[in-house]
Every structure is written in structure tokens, then in C-alpha cells.
Image (cartoon, rainbow over all chains, first blue to last red; front, side, top):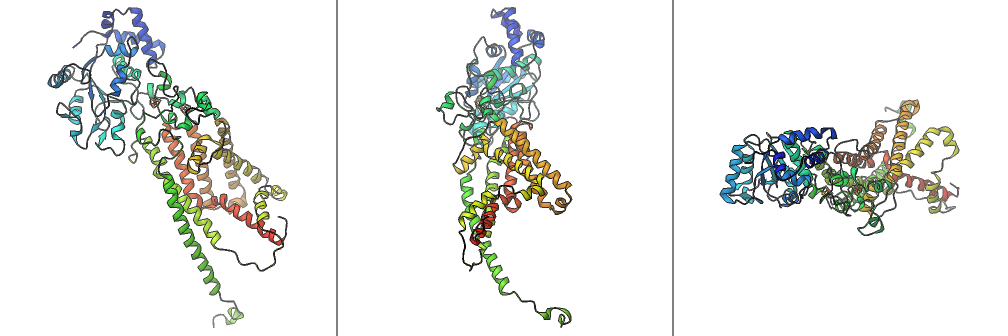
Length: 364
Length: 223
Ligand code: SF4
Ligand code: SF4
């Protein structure tokens, strides 16, 4: 495999020192590091060997890989992606069948203990037959491949949290990577799909520091998932002022007011869309007029309608209320009549106090 | 927390099954209590009516909200803080946009809301007035003597939704789904306890005031 450092291969592509430093600056800010770290990042990259990456695709839609491929050279994502050694990715590689599997095994042997495993898609546990590659079940391939891995990157919500395959009724018994991999560091990079810059940013961090970034309690790198969409949303002033769009084409929508009432899940969603944006920073979902779906959060498919405000319960509350009214009327009527009977009984059994109840006559 | 695999799971349960259970118990409880009152009935009044009942009854519902001088002189603190508390509480409950959305989903009615900073300020005032009332209860010897266990429970379950709502709004609990989940759960607790405690006054006050007004109206007394 390629033993050149990242800097060397950049040089080979005709990228100047100046271009390289510019790239390091972008990378440093992408990883949310202070500018004083730029020389360190540059130094790390000058000497970094291209790490071997094995990419496993399980129950997925290829959307995550597509997202990554949308990264355009010479953007950060393009450069980074050109400069890791992607040794196995069955959608992209030329080899197929045995030859492909051979490439994977070879990379595992050569870089034992050092390679990164990227997984997109969930793993079916109900029946291994639901998803196999070269006759190997997803579970077996995962276990076998992570054995010598330095870390596992779960790209996309399916592999990070189970995603769409795991949504009720979860016919394949789909589970996330982190529920299976316990003895290796797992970095969750959720999103449906994740922002390409975030995928490459995580890889860049590993490339630069040889370590995994700081993670939140759902295993997501804090640099990218540390703040909610709502906290960084440019429509937030409208939320605070109480100005909301009520349909997708009313005056409020045209004026760019907050989309909360149209079901925006930004307040509960941690992702970098509002800052990094999509498609080469052209725009992002909320900017183009649609509420956030909460795609980087666990269970987002099962969290009720995308078009209902977050404060609205998502169970069948009308049915619950209907039963409750019926039960309440029945129990209330029963209690009311029981009370009436009690009252009537009390009245009829009421014995009058006579003089005999007092004094000397009392105990006779 | 093995019951829920993550904060979103918790929020889902709170917004789903837990809400249905709380709503169900709330409706059943309130209906039972109100039906019990109505079904107990009134004794037939054989005296000749000197006036009507409905008009004075309805008027009394409103007019009793005006503080009379005697009450104010006897307990100025309770009157003033009581008023501040109820007004701020209603602002928070009925004029915060996410709450209006909830009411709209449940009842199909809606009205304009307030800017969230104003609701935020009302929340703070409401919490401060609740604390002041608790302090008053604990320091006033007669009030303290009269207070039961229930009074403190009711204070607590009323205070919790304000506190958790304030914390969720200001994102003082991390992650947000946990904050929102706790807020909704605290409201569900309030809903379940509501029908079986003095909180029922929110409904029974109308019955009681109407009844007083109607009785007086019938007797020809201006209420
Ligand atoms: S559009 Fe969504 S994320 Fe933006 S302020 Fe409104 S609710 Fe928050
Ligand atoms: S705005 Fe929300 S739903 Fe859309 S991509 Fe970003 S996190 Fe996912």
C-alpha cells in the first residue's frame, strides 16, 4: 500500500507549500482548534502516513457513501479523502468477489492494530441471511474485521444508532455498531446522511493526532455534535420573538421565520448543519425552508411526525382521551350513585337522640 | 439507566405512552370528582324564588375575583402574591408557543403567543412567588399549623414543571431531550395528582362561585 506521507502526495499533485498551509488552516478551524494549533497540524500532516481504511457497508442505502463522494476537490474533504488509503469499499472498488475480500484481508494483516474500520449501515441479528457480502454475514464480517482495528467509525445514523432498518417494527432485528463492538473505541458520526465535512473532519482528526476526538454521551465527536441545531440556527431570533411560519408558503415562511410550528426538531438535534452547512456550504435544510428532522439522533424515525411541533405528544392521545372520558363518566356515575345511596341510607337509618341517651339511663 | 437506552428513548416514552396514561388519569379523575359533586344533587327548595339564579351565579364567578377590602387588609401578602403567581402562571401556561401548539393539537383551538423572553420573565416571577408563598406558609404560625402534608406535595408538583421548563428552555440540562423529557414528565406528574388534591380548585371554583351566586340570586340578595 501507499507509504507516502500526506504532504508528499499533495506535492505530487502540484500543491504548493502555501496551498498546503491554507489547507492546514482550514482543517484546523474545521476541527474547531485555535489558530495557534496550525503549525502543529501542519507538522503532523507532513509526517503522517496515510492510514489504511476498511469501509464495511451493511444494511444501508449508500446515501452516506454518496454524501462523502459529494465532497469536491480541492475542498478539505476531497483532499483528505484522496489521502487516506481506502483499501476496501465494495461500492467503489474495482475488484469484486474473492479479489475484493482478499484486499480486505491483506489490509488487515499488513496494518494490524493500526487500520480504521468505517461502517455504514446497521447489522441484522434476526437472521444473518438478511444481509451478506461474499456469503459472509454482516455480523461475522464486522467481528472479523474489527479484530485488528485501531478504532471503528460508525458513519450514518443506521450504523451509529440503528437508523431506518431499526425503526419499528424492525423486521431484520437491526442493531447499531456500538451495541456490538465493546472492546474498541467507536466513534459515532450520525446523520441521514452525515455532512461530508464531518465525516472527513473525524478522519482528519485521527490522521492528525492519531487519536480519537472527544465524544459526547452518544459517542459523537463534540466538535461537530456539541451544539444543537437550534442553538446555532439563524432563524433563532424569530423563535425568541415568537414569530413562526404556520404553513410552508405563508407570509412568515417567506420572511424566513422560525419553523418550530411546522415540526422543526432543531431544539433536540445535535449536529453541525447550521454552521458547516451542506453542498459546499451553499445552504442547509432549515435555510432552504424545511424543519430539521432530527436525523443525527437515535430513534428519529420513530419520534412522531416530521411535521408536528416537538411539544406535541406523538401517541394516540385522542384515543386515550376517548377511553378516559368513557371510563371517567362510568366511574363518576357509579361513585355518584353510590354516594346518593349512602346519603339515603344515612338519612333512613338516622336515629334520633332522645333523653334516654343521656345521664343515668345511658347504660340501661 | 437501563430502562431507556438513551435520552431520546426517554423523551419518546414521555411523549408517547406516559402522556397517554397521564392524560387518561387526569380526565378520569376530573370527571369523577365533578360528577360526584353534581350527582349528589340539591335538596328541593320549596321557598318562593325572589330572583333568578343563572345571572347572579355567572356574575359571581367573575366578581369574586375582585379582592374585597376586608380580605386584603387581613392578608395582603396572600392576595398580592397570589395574584402575581396566578397571572404569571397563566402567561407561562397559555402564551408560550410550544404550549399553544400542544393545546391546539389536543383541543383544536389556538391563539397568538408571546415572545419567549417575556414568558421566561413570567416563569421567573412565578417561581419566586411560589417560593415566597412557601416561605410564608412555613413562617406564619397559624398557616403552618393548618398546613397538611398535601399542601407541600401540591406546592412541589406545581413548582417542578416551572423549574424543569425553565431549565429546559435555558438548556441547563444536557442533552436537551433529557431536559425536555423531564419537563414533560413533571407536567404528567402534575396531571395525575391534580384531580385528587386541592389543585381541583381550578375546576371546582367555578361550581362553588356559581352556586353561591345562584343561591343569593334566588334569595334576592345582590352578590
Ligand atoms: S427553525 Fe428550528 S432550529 Fe431554527 S430556531 Fe426554529 S425551531 Fe430552532
Ligand atoms: S437539519 Fe437536521 S435533519 Fe437536516 S441534515 Fe441537519 S440534522 Fe439532519
